[in-house]
Length: 419
Image 1 (cartoon, rainbow, N blue to C red):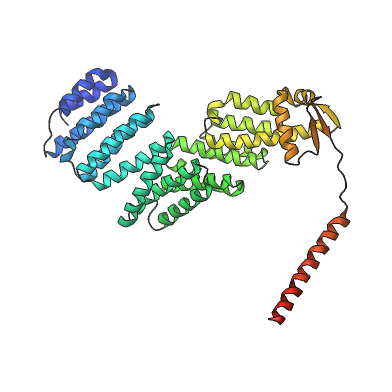
Image 2 (cartoon, one colour):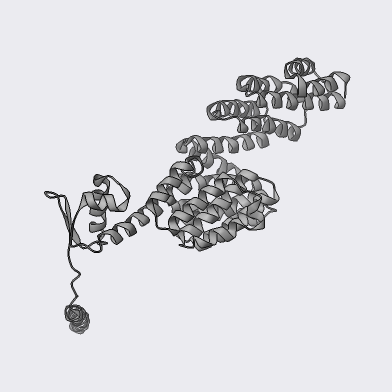
């Protein structure tokens, strides 16, 4: 490496401004076809991109990607694809840059089309689908997915095909179309079985399988998939996704009413690597559920809002868990009464608003969880005693159904003889 690059490398740690100037000088010179110059250009490009990322200079980073493309025509196609993907990946750690990432990625796609670099274009469009999913632009994501799937199936590019089918499953899951999400995941697994599947991709498939099984209330199977996902992410040192898989494992135990198992999982060897606020949040939820305490449950949601509410998957299941806890508490509170004021129920259940309690009681009455009515004039809940069903009526109805079947058979036989 040249002395100028070494100087820029050393300056990047102490004087980023000085390093930026030196890197720009290196990048301003066309390396031609000289292998050493091309290598230095590549290193300077990535180092300067790293400085812009660390300083959150998003516009400068976007401009760097655009201006460097003219020189990268001298690179091999595989090398160019790798560099462009790495430069675009620098945006991922900078918050609130989804729109800019979409703009830059679209620009790179157009450049790849003009340069006839199909492999790079497919990879960039796959990344664009993930960005659309992150932005919740599901229509644009599905449109691009359909185009990619037709092309990839024709080319038989299994690895990119697996990634696109997995993204399709995630988009349909976000749209709450669980049957299509499962069908896309099945296609992804089928494609993955025909080629070598990297551990990280396998972990992503396991993670999505666990999520879909959770949506179908099969938390026992989901738990086993999340274990596989956690081990896969841990082996690849992907801390963020490993923490998410661990949280989902704990959620499954809570939803299965096995809150006591949460402690044993947290104290495990693998889980201890990811101890922190995310794990503490799930521990607080497990404790509240074990105590059947709505107050503790709401307190944990407020205290760990970023760890619980920010995750849409955990949020939806915790909402269902909260409704279950609320129903259990309401049933326990009203059990001694035949007539009770709604305001009194609200006070007993944990200082909730009477209007919210009334709405929940109405829902429970419609769902036949409670046998009673709400007297809106006096704002009271009137609970009826459970009446014993006369089994004679059920037996009579069953006999009539069987006689009806016999008559239908006799009529059919008689009609056939007449014909």
